[in-house]
Image: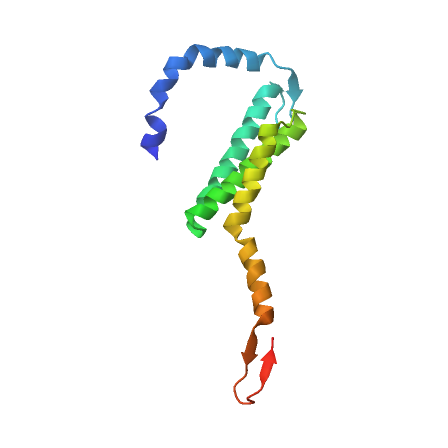
Amino acid sequence: MFFTHALPLPGFLLVSSDILKHIRIANQSPLVSLPFIAANVPITWVYLLGNVITQCLCINSVYVLTTECPSLKVTLVVTLRKFLSLLFSILYFKNPFTAAHWCGTALVFLGTFLFADISGMIRQKFLSKDKKVFRKGDGKQKVS
């Protein structure tokens, strides 16, 4: 893990001027007073800290999920989480919900439906109602 995080660090030197520009922009954002710190902090830094904390919680949850579930289920869960994040951002920031969004929504739900095999579960439920089960000992047919 060290090398996957340390090796890309020199690459940030290539975009250092852009990073410095955005640090200046973040420092110029409106100030907000935090109850646990006796100072005013630019709101952009508060948003960035919140983003870092939630991303850390999310990636740790994904790591736990990969130990408990097969990789296909993890991919499905992560895709659904990203989809819900997209919907939240569309609603919160009042962005338009375009035809491409509808197409993506349909594909996400279709993929979830196919993966969960809901149609197979429904078919299995109807087939099990039609089956007749024999009980040992009484020789009579019983319908389950």
